[in-house]
Length: 454
Image (cartoon, rainbow, N blue to C red; front, top):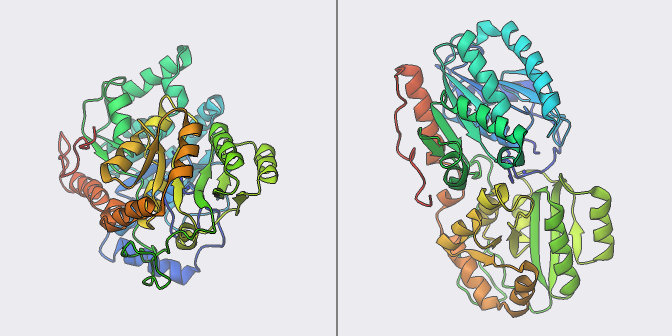
């Protein structure tokens, strides 16, 4: 997930990796907040209709999704693990049960953790018997959900949300084959598959896993609550007096500025940015904000020392600092080069929605799923191989007029292009109907069909 993404109060999905800047609200404020979202007539959260199983209770995409469920009146109980990563000190304000600790990428350790989690779950079974939906993230949680359905939450239906296709699922070899087989068998018990990109269905779940059930596209859009006001479109005329809330045209005395905000991952990505900065020292500046993940920290800071036009501003508060961060850049970097044959090619990164909301065009790789989205709306630029050469030529030749045309087109798009809305409501309607009238087959809500891009 690029999700693309650690925060304080309001958060974004998988790739918005701002770090926590403070604690949660006090008890009274928190109680009022929960009462507003769950509502006085709702069932107590202790008897949750939706049981949310997650690999990390502090993960920002988990926090975002739970808040969206609560905003739509769904009582939620979160069952999840902890991981030693960013935002690790966060504790959810909603009802939750910790299942233990896991380590990213350590599958053997995760199998042991699952066994321990089952013991915890069975201790809490009185709270789980009346659940109507078991909402599982990643294969570990899906396995737990199916065990729960078999022994505890027998009337519940299982929904499976996928934000990334991990390399292990698409690799060759016996381990990957067995992992795909386990997932395929589990999918036969899944009533709804929730995907953050149509590319995951088109390239993996339909052809490889042969999934034919209903699926819903829920993109990594921004949560509406807590968002600052969006910049307004302005006439593409260079002027000293720009309307309030708009970004001035690029003056001739400064370079183009690229922003890479969120989870900073992929050595290949950082290497490409380093080479661009070296070749265009007076024409280009690159700004990083967020959390280093699959990037060697020592090597990263060595790169900063060697290139004064690459700067790292540290972690940030999400969404509090987003408006200022995006106001200071001309482009959002959406070239994920970490797994270019599968996940990076298929995903839709969170930063596309963040940047689009604040009027910043995206840079992408031609043929990737995010490039399809950028081209559909004509709100950015995609680059063909060799990336370094085509991007150097682009920045040497780009005019302010061409840039501003793209930007104004971006600002003219409706907020719903970048802010979560109908998809979440469709998901919550599905859950509410399952709770009210259990059926043999799930209802197909509007929007619960393959995305037009597929």
